[in-house]
Each structure stands twice: as C-alpha cells, then as structure tokens.
Image (tube, rainbow, N blue to C red; front, side, top):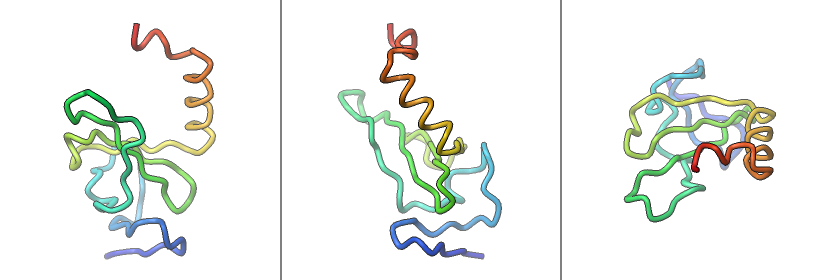
Length: 92
C-alpha cells in the first residue's frame, strides 16, 4: 500500500515501516540524488531525504539492494566530521 507524505518534494514511499537495511526499492525510485559523483565509472552513492527528516543511502549500481537509514543528527555529524578531516583515512 502506497503512503504519500505531506511534503511535496518527498517521494512516495511504498513501505509502512522504514528501517535500516530495508530493500531500497521499497522507498521508491523517485527522490534519489547523487550528491557525490565523479570519474568513478558510475559507481555513486545515492541519497534520499525522507519525510521524517532521516536520510536513506544506497549504492547506485544496486538500487534494489539495502538502504542505510540515518537520522539528521547522524548525517550532520558525519558530514561535519568528513569536512574536518576525520574520515581522511578512508581515502588515503
């Protein structure tokens, strides 16, 4: 059963329960963005902001794979930490 959220820019969600590791396809195909892409052959991280403020992430090459669900506070901490260099070890 489809559930339509009140925020017009938020996509239709086909699942009543949104949880970490759920199949990303249950979040629908609209509303995913590739905020970090480049010369990586199309392997990108895709993000979707959910109606309740959480953020879903999925691998673009596996759109039916699992979605990782993070709170707004978790995403803020990650992005601020990455900007401060705390995640540099991941790419060096």
